[in-house]
Length: 243
Ligand SMILES: [Ca+2]
Image (cartoon, rainbow, N blue to C red; front, side, top):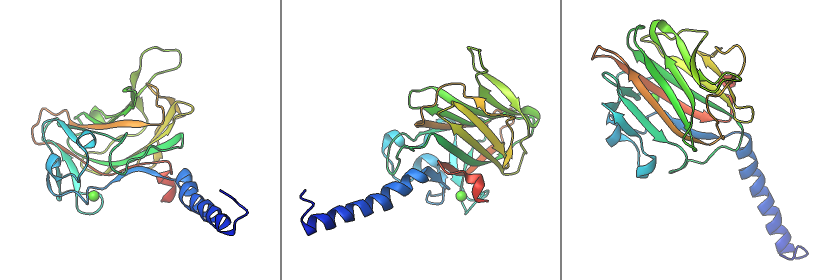
């Protein structure tokens, strides 16, 4: 392009403006996804989820999952797993409107309502990297215990360890993960309160590109217990800073 031409100069200027207003804000703060279930219909998750290519749709891997309007954290709809031990999973490494985040510091924030006894056991989030390795595992364990997967320094095997804090049955619990892909460490917050004394090593490598999110409802012997999820957000902006 001949930049001595006034038209070329104008086009260059316009292009630079576009880059500034489109590209720069995207690098500062972005969301991989925000899911509040408000644009989902009520009913079986497999049938009510919005249009999405087959590969990147929610999959129900065990038992029953539905979008319902009886219990919601925000708006009118939330996801319900159960009764019993249902499980769902979805890929976020592609599909409509899904773009990987550029930042190495990322946050996963979600609300979960266990309609279960404190003696029950729920895998509330399990996250997988594009390589297929499981880099985060959060469990609401028996007696209110909070457990996460980590790989302690100098140890080969990842293991579940207890954190400070306790989950509440039949209430909305807010879980926030801060993931540092550069340091390969994470911090976790429950109800906005830090549960990890210091950043903990991830159990497996996280490249900064999320592949898969999955949840499992209560591991209950009782058949009538469920687990609700709402307001799932993956972002490079700290969700707790906006309170
Ligand atoms: Ca909602």
